[in-house]
Picture 1 (cartoon, rainbow, N blue to C red):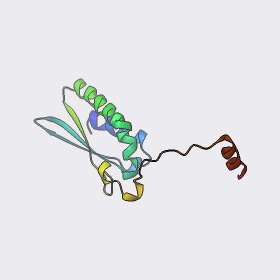
Picture 2 (picture 1 turned 180 degrees about the horizontal axis):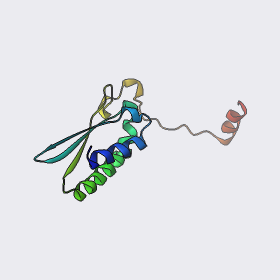
Picture 3 (picture 1 turned 180 degrees about the vertical axis):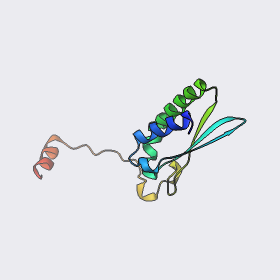
Picture 4 (picture 1 turned 60 degrees about the vertical axis):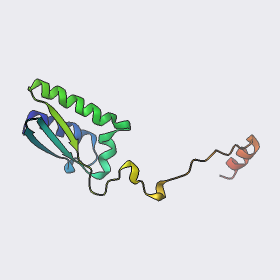
Length: 115
């Protein structure tokens, strides 16, 4: 196993809840090294991160590892079976924006008293 592949496996397994499901495939062509990552569907959010920041950071680190070894390293994250894309949100998860209802202090205190 090459250093870039070992590095990716180490980082990803440290971030996910299902490290046993982490699989990295390494291919080399004229464009450089392509690491393809497969993970458990439940761990996608941990690897992508908010606004893709975790995935961007992992890609940046892989580029640094690649430069050290004179190789261009790219990362492809495979979408797991049953995964959801942002446009594929089930209707049960969709909600219309609502305006919060303001209560008076007396109404709020009364609600608290019901607990």
